[in-house]
Structure formats: structure tokens, C-alpha cells
Picture (cartoon, rainbow, N blue to C red):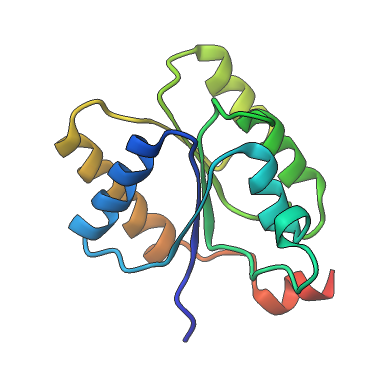
Length: 152
């Protein structure tokens, strides 16, 4: 059985390290692939840019998407994910520090599966990641299968 990969789209190195630390503390052993801007996220998912010249990597089990990203915003990444047949069913969890109501509403309008505000407190963040991992990586049945993605 292949280990389920999580794609973390995060430009803040401290938040990246905090997220990976929270995964380890909760004994979530999934591989975490990290990209640091919206353009790199789209390249990863579609096998373009730095990821071209070979088969696109298998789709991750889910995407943890920050909204405030360089090059291409998180909302634009989400829109592009939903427009492409290979990725349109991919679970996307917005994981952001934004407290803007319009970001919340727009994320859901564009097809986000979940919207989580990053807790400031580390222990709260650890608990949020534990619940996220339990639900999205253990309990949730994903509509994405590698062989389906390859056929489209």
C-alpha cells in the first residue's frame, strides 16, 4: 500500500515547519510534499515547470492550501485546481491565517472542501492537525485514485 502524500502549499517557512512538526507530534507519517508558491503548486499537480519532463507525480491525498501566496494566490490555485479534469475532485483544505470573511466565502464558492484558520497557540494547532489528519487521511474516502487520474 502506497503512503498517502499531503501537498502543503505554504510560503512561510515558520508555518511550514510548524505544520510538519504538528504532523510528527501526532504520529501522522504521511509524506508531506512542500511547495512555496501558487505557481509551484500548479506545476506540481500538473507536471509542468520544474516538474515537467516526467510523469506528473501521483495526486496527493489532499492539499493544504495557504491563501496568501506569492506568484499565484491561493484562491487562484483553488480555482485552477477545480477547472482541470485531473484535479477537480482533489480534496483541498484551506489552511490560512486570514480572518477575512470574504476569503472564507470565496474559498467555498471556488470549491474548497474545508476552511481552517491557523490557531496562534501551538497546542491548538497540534490538535487541529491531529483532527485534520484523522479525518482527511484516515476516515475520508477520496474520489481520486491514481489510475483514474492517469486515464483523464
